[in-house]
Amino acid sequence: MKSPEVDLAADEETPKESKGFRFSVKWEWALSTAFGVLVIFAVIVFLIFNSFMTVLMRQEKTHVGDTLNVVVEKLNTQKEPLTGATVNNLLRPKAVLNEGKKPAAPYTNAVITSLARDSQTVTVYDQNGNPLFTTRQGAVQFEQTKEQRIQTQMIAHQKSLVGRTPIRSKQGNAIIGYVQVTDNLRDYRATQVKLLQIEVVLGLMAALAAAVLSYILATFLLRPVEAIRETIHAVREDPQTDMRVPEMHHQDELSDLGLLFNSMLDTTQRYMDQQQQFVEDVSHELRTPVAIIQGHMEMLDRWGKDDPEVLNESIKASLQETKRMQSLVQEMLDLQRAEQIEVNYTNEVSDVTEVVTQVYDNFKMIHPDYLFILDDDVHQPIQAQIYRNHLEQILIILLDNAVKYSQKRKEVHLSYESDSRNIEIAVQDFGEGISQENRDRVFNRFYRVDKARSRTKGGNGLGLAIAKRLIEAYHGHITIESALGHGSVFRISLPILADADAKILNKKKEQAQAANDIPGIQSELLVDDSQEKSTNDSQEHTD
View 1: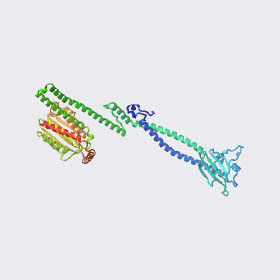
View 2: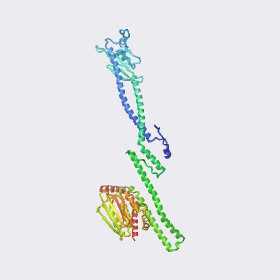
View 3: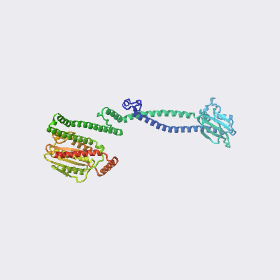
View 4: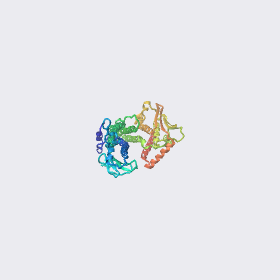
């Protein structure tokens, strides 16, 4: 078994104030278990020990009582007051010769057997309290008594038993003397010491066995903690590592902790990847408009400022690229905010029917040259757990996309239906359509089916990526059906919220707004700006 270790590697990596000797969790578990077992064992042994010693003390009292009774029975036959010679002859008779002229064994006599106990001292007194007989020196001070009494008493700083009883003659029942038996409890104390030694040894063995078993058990049960610790070190050394806590086959809190830790790492990794992707995408997309503006400015600086036609063209191109950068930045901000929906918009509820009708009416107004058809199969309010502005933004992105690519047949269909679980909204255009190869990538960031034509239509390739992320953040789905030359159909599906759940979420929202003074106003304004920007862009393209 290993000794308590000091984790030097961990000490080198931790702050200076945390350095120092420490026990591992396994050793703390093992030692605390051993201590607990030792305490429980001590309590149980204490109870058993007390019970056993009580039985032994009762036996010692019985022995003292038996000795008193034997001596009394031997001496109470006397009619005259007791004398030293009489008592000595009765209690210590001379050896009797048997037929073979050999002395009989002295311990066949019950009196002699009682008096021969090494731990007992028998003393006989006359009726006046004068000692007549004693088996050994060191007797306890005499006390008269009228009945048999056996009690504990301290003699020479040691616990002893002292038994006293009067000797009454069989004729007349008169007291003719007294018997006193003192038991120094030597055998009792010897047994007590042996029991204590055995209990101490057994207690240490039990504590050691408990420590070993608990250490082994702790090593087995704390494997997820060790795996988490190794994973933390790996992540600290390389934040981009794919190392995760191994899956545990038994279901307990530590396994749940490992799964939760893996989920946290995946979420953190996703945020890091999103941040890195955000920087790379912005850098890549801004490089072209910045280069165009820089080229025009350098041309104007060299010779173009004296040519009105070149000056006008450069200013127009620079303003166009500036607007495109503004649109790009806004869309990137929208996409970045969409990654935080699970944190900031958990209690939002919207009337989907109302939102669909509103967006449909708005597009009919700003695109009068297009034919918009609404196919409503619901005809009643439907609640969904989604932020209203986000649902509007999704519909605006899909309808705006349909308008941009429906140049020949200016017609857009908007359908709206539901079942017992989900609400489905479909936006159909009759434009160019998308091939199977491009269909799988239209939701990627900055992806354009026709980059040249998309750029002239003002697109940055982020609209569908934003819509897809918003839908998935609210546990919905978005799909596409398309055929080249026949147009495309985008379908979004959202889970329907029961009326009771909607009331609960609305109540939570009101409580949160009251406590935080309507948090997220700035984010809502940014989303509103995005919607206004998208609507204005659609108007500009129409004009």
